Amino acid sequence: MFIINTEAAIYRDGKYLICKRSEKEEHAAGMLSLIGGKVEVEGFSTDILERTVVREVAEEVGVIINRRPRYVHSSSFVTDTGIHIVNINFLCEDVEGEPYAVSADEVEAVYWMTAKEVFAEVEAPDYLKESIGRAETLRTGAKISWRK
Image (tube, rainbow, N blue to C red; front, side, top):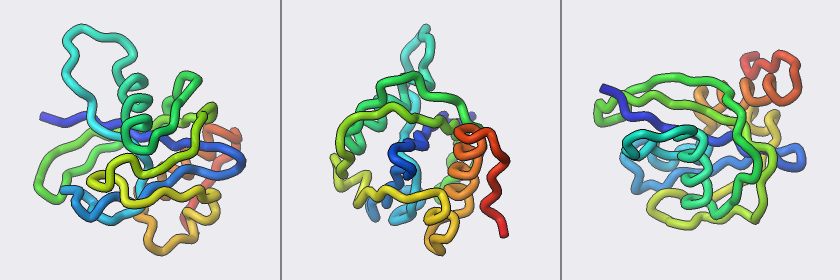
């Protein structure tokens, strides 16, 4: 059984919104990441993944996504505690508001970074670089690789 998680590659003015996860988080504590969270049980529902990413972004960093998020890619991983996750990433280009860490229990800090800055950041995990590379490919139409 998997938990479903969504993440937003939020792009504005040439930069992506990156967060530093709280040290209190169970998985990837203190790591750089996209903003997102778990899908909640709703019964019969439509657009649940898109609505989840919109909700999570508002809850975690106070930013409103105005236009439908675009699917980037999906992946799976196992958390530090052995929980299996399916992760779905979306590109969000029409957003409003200035991001801030709404809850210190989830987000320690937020940063606007260019794709090149993310790719060069030694503390950025490979999965973050992969997600930004794929978002850039979708956004620009050009194949973007973060690997050297």
